[in-house]
Image 1 (cartoon, one colour):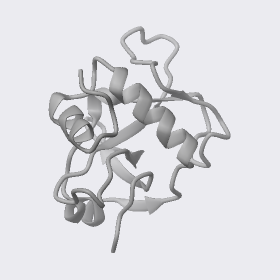
Image 2: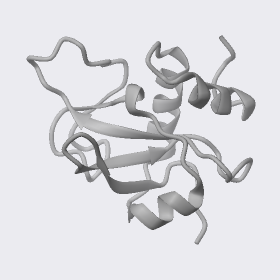
Image 3: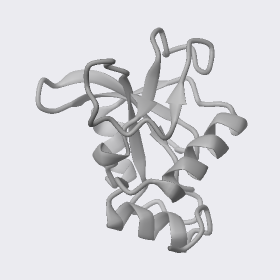
Length: 128
């Protein structure tokens, strides 16, 4: 099965292993050995530690039912095989939303360096 940029997968996220929506923000056509996935989380108005640099509202994607944000801290870089084994495929994000997420990823101080390097190598974010 082929995965593409903007594809989504429902997979558990520690520590409670509740399913979250993960979005592929790298380009697996360039390198499918490691792809960059970022999860969506529900905004918690009482948590000041959240990185709200990329928020989503109801209507941005069918999975979004509450104000949400892309949690760049929890970005992952699994192989395509791991994604397909552990995740349940969801509806892809629209190209404009993917562009918005990538733009925020390039500016985020929370994106892990190894994930940033993949996006930079693929020309999807500007080098720091």
